[in-house]
Image (cartoon, rainbow, N blue to C red; front, top):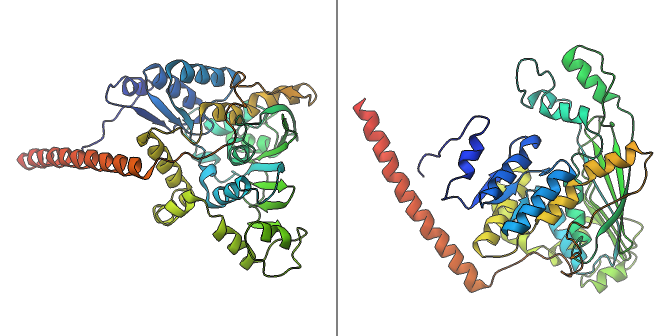
Length: 405
């Protein structure tokens, strides 16, 4: 390939966004610049794919929605946890009614970050905290809800037949957060807005309950929870992957149980769980798992996420994650802060779709026809060949110039 063009400096992204030969801007800086780059890109007519969290407050959320709608541009948040293997398979099971009606879901980001705080960039020599610890110190609420909320929101068909109505948030006091600031600065810390553990409860229009946790401060194993409680069965990813179904529900799902004595009171055996997964393996997992694990990126889910993004764009399909998902999964930060700052009061969650939340019936991944897939793949290969030819000429020219020196 030809050498990449490099844009640097505080406003370098603006020049990149003004280019006429770019269709999509892939945005992965620190949190505070996600919105700024996305807004600039869409104002210049570019589709955007934005790292999580894509927006940090309600103002940023509404601006992205307005731009996406006005300019008819994709605005996808890069929530890779929607593409992990267990989540994709459990989603497929839920959509096929294996667990019955899903009533209660749990998600989390529980990741103790003490060994990482010093790795986040600092703006100058006077900055002792780095951008992420500073943000935690200044802001209350679940400021990193998307890993836990994204996959379970898809299961509940949020803004595709159901919507989040009300949330209530609670947090503990800050203990370890203050200690991290004191460790970094050598000074006493009297104010740290983000509690060591934050819990948010959300009720939906269809009578479901969502429970979300955020904790990056206290010692505990990494945990995104991902629990689905249905009228017929149960799925759980952490601390270990498992399913709970009775023998009769296994049979109703088209899977022969190892015993007629199975009940929902305990997890399925490894044999039964594997049989269930084999029956209901997600088409996305079936297509990408082998290559994703070879390439890596958070175990392969980054590869699947990017592959789906490219696939949908090349085939002219709706993206898996739209701007309304972005809004719903990011709004817990400011709305949760409002709840907690006012005695844990219920806070209304806006209908970001402006009344269209029930127009689409159920979340589904979009797929092209076999002929359209083949044509898109052929077009992509043709483009790649031409780009490689261009790159070959570029590097031959570079090598020639180097030899003259």
